[in-house]
Length: 520
Image 1 (tube, rainbow, N blue to C red):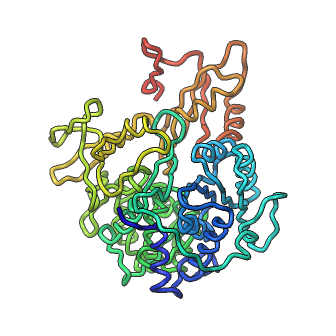
Image 2 (image 1 turned 45 degrees about the horizontal axis):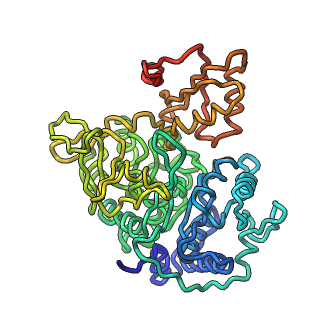
Image 3 (image 1 turned 180 degrees about the vertical axis):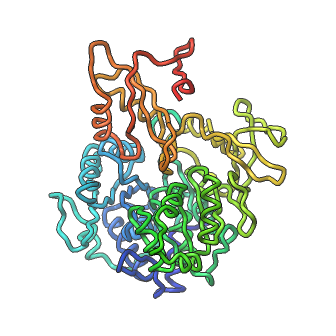
């Protein structure tokens, strides 16, 4: 056992390079000293509320400087960060707060189109969380919700210095919510050392170093594992600059990359598809390509044609990686400086082992070029377990540390892995994981719905779209359009089905299990 707090990533860089630019958002430029000072104020605020070691604190913010400030402030206080998707509705916010036992919630006020603060406030009230701090775009503005303290008000009187609480490296730093293909979201507990080692893997994977000083475009949501570790924590670990883009727009991304001289881009395949589609004669592709040092992709398989076209236009080979929330998240990656192998998720990163196992027995599959097995992962990236769910943890984690991913793959003779199929029913829409069981359970609360089956169907830009096939209750009536509109009010924007089909009956096995493969 040894003492380590993930906040050290920020503190160490702020000590070495206090005046270096840490975060850029439009015309806002914040130094490492400023970000660290703000994080200290957040930690002081939490301590003043009696929140500290071992407590959970939720954070619900898009890619804004406040996310990083609050994230590291929570860690400095010795507490655990519980990042929440900003698209969650109040009922979903309440569930996550109750399940994690959160003592506080920091939430961005949002926009007229995305009422984050209102949903967060309603969710916090339902969950009985008294400490809600509203993050306003203008830190001096009054709270738009009566009786709720803003972040600006909360930290206004707090000192910019704080003695970071000592935590053990095996203590839980972050709880990332995820789901299997069944059940409600589960909180994956990631240790301080899990998150530290995964962030520092950028040295081996991307040639990152304190001498390189990369400029990262942060367009992947920071509340997701990919953006949080590879972009935010990876950049801070090596003293890079994070250029924030709260919402992906291909033209805006290209303009920002040019303006800020972005050298490191990380995205899901649909983002690369968007960037290539937005290129025009008006864009200085030569300068973009000259600046760009590293391009990484994850979330779902990258089409071969995008690989080829991006390398042709930018002169950079996209590195594909693979991982899950439970693996902090990076488990494997293409090898920096080696030719790409389209369709491959690369090889295990340093400190990590992977193997293919029989899903039924957990025994390792004998290797042949065509042998398929479930990916199992072991190493310094593997999580502690699911918060308060020992049975769910035992289903995927062995006593000697092997984690079962639920993803089927094969391996070539050089040890490069290739995903054959994602977890059986998982839908990946624009890089977001959508879990059919969760959607089905919500659909079944509609007064007209008797039976629901949710599947993914191919989509040109999102990869997959969410489709619901429904059987209505006898005598009930509802149109597909009505179901879509109702779903939009009940679920986060990336989850709700855009396509609804109403049928008389669903195909089933003799035991009553819905045959989703026939629906597809």
